[in-house]
Amino acid sequence: MSSAKARRRQQREAESHLARLLLGELAAAQGIVLPLTDWSPRGQAPHHPALPAGFYVSIAHRHGHVLVGLATAPLGLDLEYRNPRHAHDLDARIAMLPQDAREHLAEASHLSETERLDGFYREWVRYEAAFKLIR
Image (tube, rainbow, N blue to C red; front, top):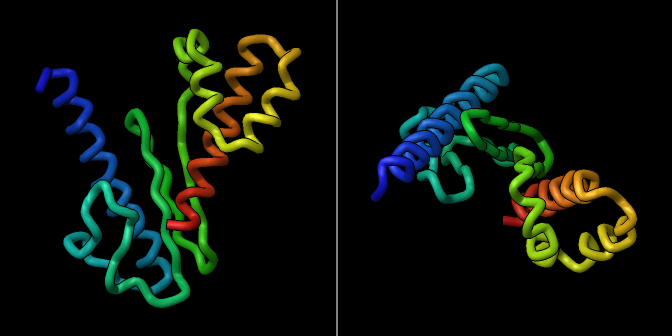
């Protein structure tokens, strides 16, 4: 593994660890104790056996930033950063979106490249957050 890949992996591990710490703090504010060691492993949907029925969690992390949520209704969070380099293959990226998102972006074909890229990210975050709701 290259050193750059190893650093990215370490960063993702650290972000995941921080997310679980933060969820523990959110839960503690509600009187719920969620020991750090009992969280599901990274790469799986976040789950804790001590989380009471009727509570839901979601995690998103990217480039050193972490977003977490604890709620009494299902929730899905996603976090992305705009990367101008994605403009060169924007059509391929849009093709990965669900049909309704592709149609929505097709209606906005008159927009500038920057506006289309922003639109892609909005639709992608919406898609990822919705996916987290059902898993």
